[in-house]
Image (cartoon, rainbow, N blue to C red; front, side, top):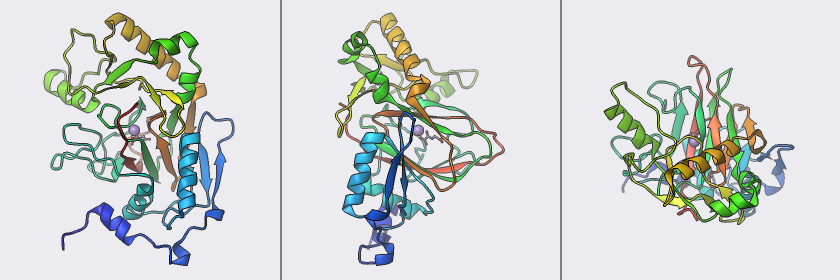
Length: 320
Ligand code: OGA
Ligand code: MN
């Protein structure tokens, strides 16, 4: 017999419903919205190692569509248990080798199913200890992941908070003229990993920084996949601004100057504090977010303090 992949093994080994001590009683679970915050709900009483009832997963999916991020407290999982839990919500995100993303491996051309996000050299130090600007994971790919989960294993004493931004609210609070102006626009988000390689190869000073907007006299770096600037959420039907704050982007078939100004003003709007929730991590937290209608960012932390989270991203469809 062929060896199982990590994911197949995870589901093969997962607890079954007939093991009563391993079956989560749906009545033990409560979902509490974060009071006074722009988004988010906390899920209490759920042990992600256990087999979950259909009604529980359905309830969590509805809660995610409503609150945009779910925070599970006090988890204790190995990678296989984590994969078994995450895959209740969809297929694991596996981009093709022509679309490099965080943690793409040189040999396989894809990232591992469970991505360590840490500052420990050689153990998942893809993002180091610096600030991460507001982004949606894999936005530059043809089929970006619909959601991601981060599980906190080791945390620094200072800094390293992750913030999420409610981009439905950001869209809703635009004036009617701006909504009309942007509703039918398509946006290309260029791949920052291709850009990074390009800068490394072409910039004699080492790493330069990425432009925020591509003017038509500038080279196109990598593949371009136009997606709607205003996305519709597949379950709730809500509209959201689908724009990150720092990648190189381009509005399709739009004047350079007017386009770059429009994007700059939308980005300024997105950064307003009223759209944002900052999460103070505790060990054992899993945050599960919807990439379609949120952005997330991270504060820097001291390089000598260790931080290790593990991320699983779930496959999504072509944005509409
Ligand atoms: C990610 C990410 C944020 C963090 O893994 O996609 O953006 O807080 N991480 O490390
Ligand atoms: Mn991210």
